[in-house]
Length: 103
Image (cartoon, rainbow, N blue to C red; front, side, top):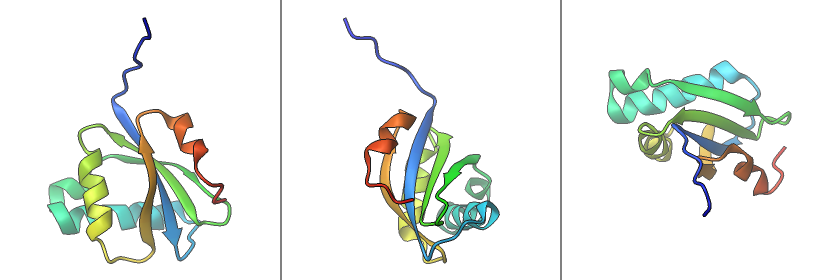
């Protein structure tokens, strides 16, 4: 019988336009999007920036399972720059490698 791996986190890969390699700028963009959509309390949601492509056109973050839907909704609604676009999200980090090489 296959065993299911449980995870308390979601991993999300975003495309970034225009490219940006500064982790603080990208983190602030995410924080501003969460604040704009869900208010001050949600803007302080713990988001861990795990990887930024060398070219600055891709980003992978880790977020708590319960907060992932808020993050995805906030990014879609945000008009901030740099613009983040969902590439793929999963509870299994290596599955994000199956996307086109963005960086």
